[in-house]
Image (tube, rainbow, N blue to C red; front, top):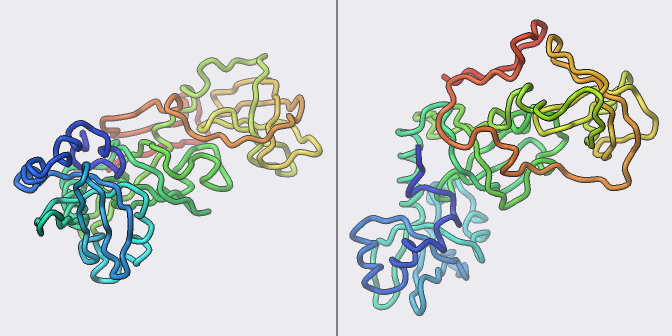
Length: 310
């Protein structure tokens, strides 16, 4: 379902629609009448925590502290949510005009976005997000108008990673799928791994006898786990001197769908170390709704990896 008005912050700033509204007083009056969600650039946070927003040429707005974020008035959202917006786009509704300055509400835009997310999105719905912050346990994203959600590290990809920075960078635009929209808690939970393809899809173009480049993701006593794609890893025989994060060349020894295994042989450790950030080409699903995602190949009987969206 298209997000329309409720895209993550920064996605509408340069759009013709946004510029048509914010380029003149007449446009701003129309925006107030239409209830349009607009964006401007926050250029300062004043001592009283109100945000100064640059609109079109010669046009300025103020977001009062209590209008700066949903939950700021109750203490559920901390002051850093306002301080950290300086130098970044902010979304808002236009709620008043005082002389040549407009009074704006980011909180109102976020309330509308949250209502839309909770009412319109079913589990499995794919939405656009922007990565805002990375922690060892997961990636925080803007899922619309600055509303935060967390993608847990276990839901980022099938291939295990030590930290979300191995997949994402702050400011990166990604897709995610809704795991749950809890109206009582006013919370939307997201997942990501289901968009990166099944075991068989990730094996397209990979055949036994090939040599490929991979990244070491684990070094247990019995071997070396090497990532070939974000949703596919294989196991190689133990090799001394390797550490997690190393880039390696590997020989694809065999592919075993009935056991969902890829057997590898490490040929050499490469000099460079690299992160494997998700790119647009890694996505097998970018929009629409998923009802059931089965990662495991049909031939596999020993392990079943799947997500059944409620």
